[in-house]
Length: 432
Image 1 (tube, rainbow, N blue to C red):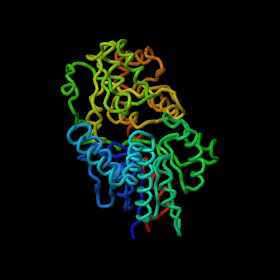
Image 2 (image 1 turned 45 degrees about the vertical axis):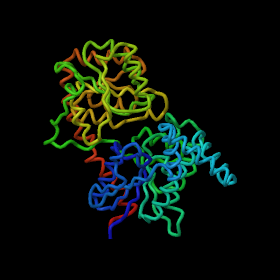
Image 3 (image 1 turned 60 degrees about the vertical axis):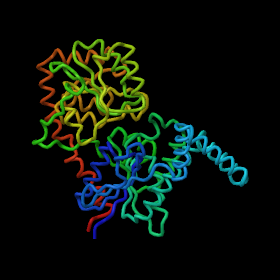
Image 4 (image 1 turned 180 degrees about the vertical axis):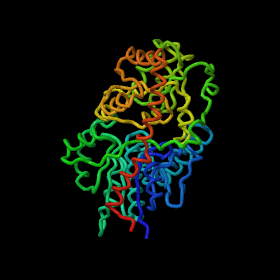
C-alpha cells in the first residue's frame, strides 16, 4: 500500500522550483503526493486542479470566500457601469425601506469589508481554514508545511486527530529575520509550533546553526539546488536579443528572480552607467518593478536596462543561457538575506554563466571556492561595476569560470541532493 503525502504551500505554485523538485522526487519514489496551494483569480488559465504525473496532484483553493467575491464584483461593476450602479442603489434603498433591520447591518458590514483590514483577515482566515479542512480530510500519512505561513495548517491537520500523523516543517526562509516579517508574532508562532513538529528542513548549514542557537536542535539540511540539465537540452535557448531589441553583438548581463526589496537591484541599476559594455536584463516580476522602471527612465537608461516578465520555471534555463554573466547581489537587510544560498546562483552555474555575487558566507563559499565568478560589495554600485568590468576585461579567466561553472554543476544539483531529502521520508514513513 502506497503512502500519502499532504503538502502545503502559500502561493499559486507557478514558479516554486523547490516545491516542484520535492513533490516530483516523492512521487517518483512511490509516494502519492497532494499539493495544497492557492488559486490566482487574476489568471483565468490557471487550473484549480492539475495532475503532473500518476502520483502528483495539485489542488489550488479559491483565494476569496464566495460572499466576498460577490460583493467585490458588484462594487466593481457599479463603478464601471453608472446605469448598473444607479439600479443597484435604487434596489438597495427599496430593500432597506422594506427590511431595514437586515439591510442596514449588511451595508455596514460590506463597507467595513471593502475599506478596512478586516477584508485581509477574512480572506486569509478563510483560506487557512479551507486548507486545514482539505488537509484533514486527506488523512495523509505525513504532512509537509513549506514555511511558517502553512505550519499552523500542517500542525492542526496532522496533530489534532485521534491518531496524530508525522509533520515536516520545511523552512525555505529565516522566519524570525526576513523582509516583510517584522512583527514579533512570527517568532513567537514559530517558537511554539516548532515544538510540535517531527522533522525540520532548512536550506544550508548557516541557517541550521542559526536554528540550533535559537531552538536548541540542528535541523536537516537540504540545499536549494536545481534539476541537473539534460545533455540533449542544454543548448536550447530563447533569443532574448530579438525579444528585447538588443543588438546581436551586445552582451546580456542577466538578473533573474523576484523584483523585490533587499535584492540589491537599485544598486545594480545605479552601477549600469559604470559598465564598460553590455545591457542589463532583469527577468521577473515583483512589488518594486514599477519603481525600478521609473528609476531607469529618470536615469535615461532605457537602452541599457531591459525588463522581461517572469517565465515558467521549466523554461527558465532557455533564458538563462543568454547571459554573459549573472547577478546575485542580495543586500544584508536581514539574516535571511545574509544566510541565503539562493536557487538562481546554481541556475546560472547550470547554464555555464559566471556570476557577480554578494560576499555573504554561503554564496561566497561557492563562488570563490569553485571559481564560478567574483564576489563584490553588493551595497556599493561601484564595487558591482568593478566586478562586471573585471569579467569583461579578463577573457582568459572568464572562460575558465565558464568551464568551472559547468563542472561545479555536476555536484550542485538536485539529482544528488534529493537522496538526502528522500532519506528523511524513508525514515519517518517507509514505503513498505
